[in-house]
Length: 133
Image (tube, rainbow, N blue to C red):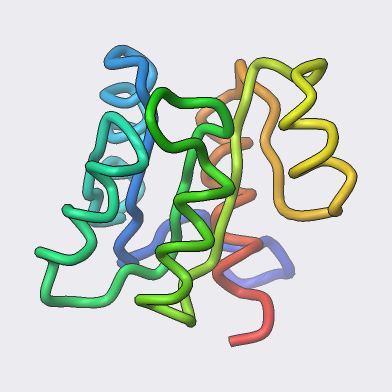
């Protein structure tokens, strides 16, 4: 092995908040294939319950921006109050949605445009987890 290429594998715990079942289960399968532990939630409120019930660390929140009841930015804010060290990666297929433009893209936070490839997903997650440890 060796070289400058970053391994995409990891052992961290990732909380996936995504209201589309198909996207959520595919994301879980990809992340588990790369060694990550995955917690799942169908919306922001459920994600907070899952995080509160999880005894171990939550290293990264992978959240859809636009979800019913509680969107990604609200979820991230609430989760960061409970777990200040969690990294956040937003994903969305709606780049024209005002919440995405104003709340995420313009703020320069970590963002992943849907649809994405499995490789792009895990490489963005690895990048985030490796920064400022």
